Length: 312
Image (cartoon, rainbow, N blue to C red; front, side, top):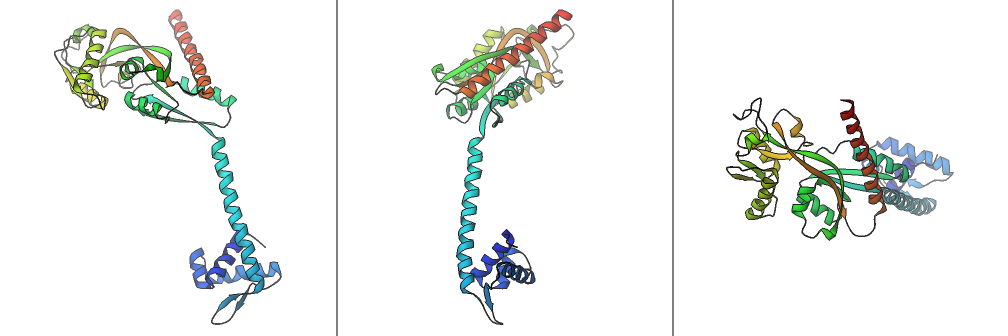
């Protein structure tokens, strides 16, 4: 019977003219090689090799079969490669980025599921980064769309003409502070901490002056008067220092850490817009459709929350 194993065995033996080398290259025994060749010769009805105690050589028919099988193997490999590449190109990927630490809920996945009904061969990839990285990956076409806070977006973007953005929902801003802070007590509000050191994470590539300017804008927006602004290398460091009682961190209530018991949270009474951002270039119907479905899903969330408040 003609099969891939027998053809590979034949081609290897035709090239090496050695049962030992063929057995080693195919990780089988010499006896298995011999049986495979015998079965192939029986199937074809003629000898492929002339065997002597000291040598192995191809018959004329064997030489013709070698040319045929080698050509077929090459065509098979090339055709299979082309089929795989066609399959890859047929799969459309939507690359989405999320701002570190923020929980945007189930709505992005729900919107994607609806989009897949229109584009069955669509796949989704997701990654998390700080806002500056999200911006750069959008500009470099490594992401199709990103979710982030509007405040961060505004502080990053010099020329908004490069981007489109859409508000999805609003989230309360909160102060996060160590539960061991002496000011934490039953009647405390965010105003109890307005003089506490403000822990602020720096953006890669920004100067200290630029970071201080950005920090002061947030301080003014939230009505804080901290003793000092403590610049830290990243957001993780800011949260860690807050846990150690070194000051306060400001973030959105949808922050993962804001939902844990590691830090005590106090609402500031300021809402933060959560947005999706994409590059304004060639029209991308896939992204536009996804954004429309996102809006619909977040409206459903808002409507559901409103109903809960009425029931209460």
